[in-house]
Structures are given as C-alpha cells and as structure tokens.
Length: 216
Image (cartoon, rainbow, N blue to C red; front, side):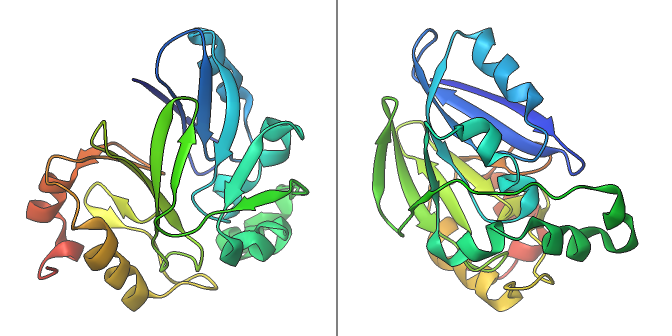
C-alpha cells in the first residue's frame, strides 16, 4: 500500500494520500487551507482521489476541503464537528489571537458525509475502521487500517505527546478516556501516523509517552 504525506499550511498539518498501488484511486486524509502540495502527491504516483477523510473540524485539518473536494469527492467528517468546521474565522482567533488578522478564513461549504464510531469504510480498495476519539474536539476521529497495522491518529496522539484540549469542545478527561478505550487496545506494533510531526508506533508511545503512563 502507498502512503505519502506532506506537511502543509501554518501549522504544518500532515496531509496523507493512501492508495493500494500507483495509477489508480486514492484517499486523502485532512485538507488544511494551503492544499498546493496535495496535487503533487497525487501526480507523483498518477493517483485519482475518490474520497476525503477529515479527522476533525479544526481549520488546520478542514480549511481546504472545498479546494480538494471541488464538489466531486465524498467528504467524511463526524457530525459533532460540522458546525465548528463552518466557522473558520472564529477558529483562527482561538488559535492565533492577535495574529489572526493576518489570515483570511476560508469558507467551508462542502457537504459532509457523517462518520460514525466503528463503521468500516471501503474506499479506493483500502478498508478503514473509524474510531471516534473525542477529547481534542467533540467529533475527532482516528482512522485504522487493520490490514496494514496503521493508525491515522489526527490530533489524538503524537510522538511523545497528545492533542491539546484547551480549545472549545476539548476535554482532557475525554481524550484520555478515548485513548484508553479506543487507541490503546490496538496492537503494539501499530504504526501511528499523526496529524502533526513524525510518525511513531503504539509500542514506543506506551513506553515513553508521559501522557500514557498509567493508562490500561
């Protein structure tokens, strides 16, 4: 399976392109406001996107969906985050404070298809299991590909850290509950591909991530 990524926009959001093989259909995960690099990833392996999965409704993951989907891709987002995704300017102020005036908030008009916890999506020849992991946001979801032992963790779990929970809709207690009940039951050798920063493994995070200490 092909998994390519590129960090984009102000927050260096990892956008992923996934496909079974070159020269065929592909799935995109997350679309920040600056989406120029996504086309390069697709062209590199002659891929045609057929679906867009969005881990959550924060602007650095959803702000570019209109440009990527262009009305032709089925775009998935948990319903708990849809309202937030529609108001990017408010998010920019929450993220950047006084610096927010330097950014024009994109208008997100794409119609979303609801994600539900535990559903299995067969997209472009790849099978994704949806894990609803609220805490970073109410509708945050991770995408697990069991056949490849890969978890696209969004802003749930990073190498050595976790997603922030101080924004509207965030809850540290809820994120930890999601971690314990939805993420940590996965196999130790699961590769974790996060929304920001380098990849890691679940085994490495169990042993070294200070936020995971004591969770069972």
